[in-house]
Length: 256
Image 1 (cartoon, one colour):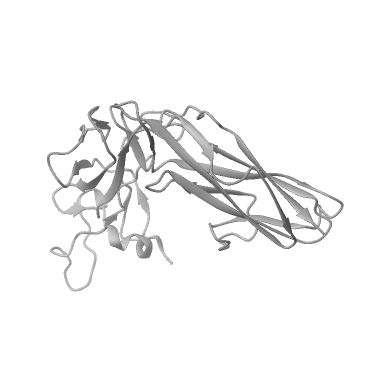
Image 2 (cartoon, rainbow, N blue to C red; image 1 turned 90 degrees about the vertical axis):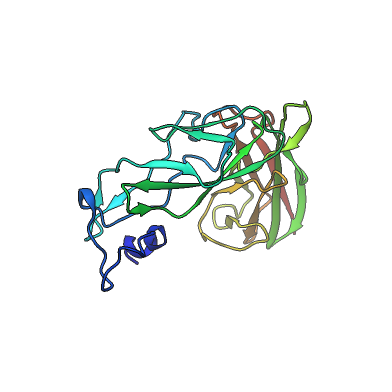
């Protein structure tokens, strides 16, 4: 599928489409991407940051009539509902209020000129996370083939000093060791929660915490002669700092 096919949903140009053709607008732009968020969440009282904790603006990408990528256009961004717990400056940097007592979802759009607007993007405003904890056993035992779902939760202290779950935090999983006489020929991978395989060769996976602060991935092990498999889970705060409890390790021990 062409890039245009992937991004057609980002075009809010129904009023300017003529005879089924995509017009070329200022700067040779034919269409734009959705809003590109550096992270799915921003901490209350802070600015939106990337995975390394660097303050990073919102942006959109622009494409020409032949699907060629153009220089990023000058875009303006705004929340769709006011008043909003965020402000967005002329350069696309998002700043949040420090008065949040609960999770908020902010809907944002980007505009390029007077004729191009993106679809809505959702940004979570959350408590700054500080801890990663396990909600599944550190060590489990199962016969081969085996499935073991690795579950964690991310939490933080809100302004009232209450520990609360934090959604929108990316958790990274990695298979770090396979042990036993058959380790070299065994099949081990990380799948979606419940064992749905998205990549058949994946030793790494990510999940984003849900409304309850939970994230999970399922370890699948097949073969013979495997004694144990080790998985690590890691997460960082929205300032790029490792959370308390990082890294958590989980061990699957197999039985004959």
